[in-house]
Length: 262
Image (cartoon, helix red, strand yellow):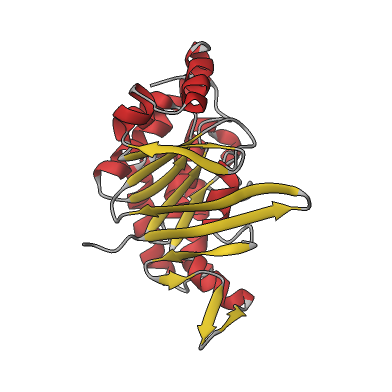
């Protein structure tokens, strides 16, 4: 069997007395799209942020492509990695946040080029050519010279996706990438994500877009109170959930049509 690209083993995270994650374990296979659903505060975003090492784990372990994140094992001892070593590991994942976080003083092209040139030390000419290709891929070839203030929210989020892809990640993490957008702009971002899924990109997506999860996900996980309540293919979790908590969540979301967009 092909080993998982992401292996999460019994991960726990606490913020003071609040237990954000309670022994979460899951695998993500290469090329798989995993969608995480659940109410606010259920632990979805915290889990995603542990994979990108923005939140340290208090227990358990996470492996990406077989490499233990954040720590190095020497015999029976685990040593915390340096910031430089964590930064190296983090380059294997691209993360797209709810807010676009683009550099306001840079054009779309410059935003996409910045990481490859400054972090990966790639040649500007090479980075520029690849950035232009990525902007074309997300449908923004004609916006390369525009600044973020000259772009719609959906366009800014597509630039943010291109910026993450510019680092050539093995894994893409999406934290509710459409939640800050006006409804009419959601579709253009989801279209880019659908194309990424078709291309074979491994993706972990925190989303309330159940239509997108039904169409694109290989696996859907419903979380509540920091734990996985139910996991399986979309047809099972979204169509015939076994757990009462899953059914209650889906009923609440579906009863508010604005929360479920295709």
